[in-house]
Image (cartoon, rainbow, N blue to C red; front, top):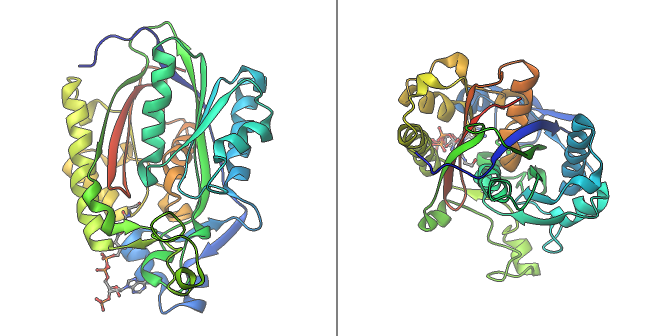
Length: 333
Ligand code: UT7
């Protein structure tokens, strides 16, 4: 059980932004040696959204504006903006800085957090610290990725898996005990870099004609290795976090897992002996939006009325790094 906290970090608003353009599995059939049935059966994905002509910060800023509107807040009331992304608009300044400017949050400081598909849960854990310590009252945590910017449209084993989208939450201070973020558990196994990475464009392989010719500016993944890792680790970290808080999966009202593959989600739920109706799934419509999956799914779950005050919520992710982690909340609104 975690130590009692000075303040609770509660989620007071959840929002999402998905681009309008829908790309179906059938669209991929036109350009690749793939099929709707292969993609559906292996991943659960039916379609995904793609953002055209705009960068990641556009989606993140849309989420930020919607969060402010939902809480009827002035941008000046936001103190910190964290954007979890692996597809920033540019290396620097951070996408969070661009969002801060776009929404006019003149008093906020801002930074990006890079943990691939675990980015949003990492950012939640990070943002909550500033609330719980009493230094901040309002922190925006946004997960946003334009995966189409790094998808290799000639690589059928990766490009069909991803989509573009963003979601986010507003974390606020609460004096009520036992509400909001209860605990989290985060992990890294850096030796897993070889299984999921984008090699080009950084200091290891700066952009050059050769790096472009070698298609190094795209995501590369050893799907089978990541799949096995994800199934084991997502269940393990979820059960570990629940157990150390004296809880069982049956105590959860909602489990929001990272949406990378329906088979990973189902295998995780099975290992946790979690009833299907407690597991949020929307991968069929959006595919894997990396930093976006969990807040997008959470926002849809809220809209469907799947959380009420006092409910226990668990969010769990695994991704490049390899990174994985889980965050446990008691819903407060
Ligand atoms: O969020 C970050 C974490 N990422 C993940 O969680 C992804 C984890 N991995 C996966 O979701 C799965 O491993 C994949 C969906 C990527 C692949 O499914 P799989 O059941 O592991 O298939 P596989 O990679 O073992 O490939 C099976 C076959 C191969 O053909 P051969 O070698 O058996 O002849 C692939 O070439 O399927 C072929 N294949 C495809 N066929 C049609 C791979 N991609 C496609 C495709 N369409 N798009």
